[in-house]
Amino acid sequence: MRLSRQLHSLSLLALAAALPGMVLAAPAAVSASHDSLEQRIKACTACHAPKERHDAFFPRIAGKPAGYLYNQLLNFREGRRQYPMMNYMVEHLPDDYLREIADHFAAQHPAPPPAQPSGAGTAALARGKQLVLHGDPGKKIPACIACHGEKLAGVAPAIPGLLGLPRDYINAQLGAWKNGIRRAHAPDCMAQVAQRLSDADVGAVSAWLGTQVASADARPAASIALPLPLHCGGVPGSSAQVAP
Image (cartoon, rainbow, N blue to C red):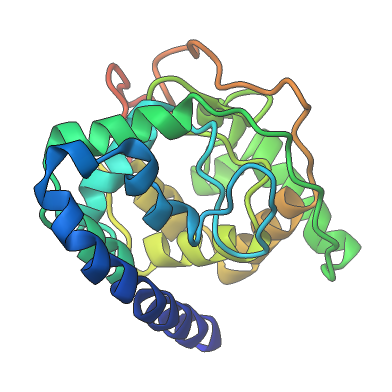
């Protein structure tokens, strides 16, 4: 609950900071000659750190697969993901506009951020590593690498990498899926996985991933072995191998 309140406060503060710029920029948006991609992404990089900075909470979106970024923008626009500032900013944006933004960030490949120090105990980190690399067959939890790639760098066009994400962000997103706050295209495979995780498992996975650093040349894989462990509505061509 405390994290939820922090998220809400951060959202309101960021929205308050962004609104004056949005209002001032409105006349320029009317004229195509004043509308540039550079102007559009200012609202993005206000929270999602540009490539030369690292942020302790907001995820860096540079280098994520274009299909994944586009799907997330659609999810915010259509209400499957709830974050007031994001919902507000994309509410009336057309598909082509969102796709152009997604393509822009997907083409960037900044240096990976440093690992985060972890206060988790040895047992929790070991459990997190186990779940990420091997899953838990007894609970029908597939390994993270089974979908996100052996290097956890994601898979084009629609599966995101997991390394370099802030621990608190990972924890919040798994919690959102577990509690039905975050949703994706049906069938929502991540919701199925998150609901099988205990609260301790969520913390363990988040803690271990937060301590890992991607290699400097990490890129989303071009493909991954199919079928995936679960059928994911946002991933073209995936089909179920493990019963929900």
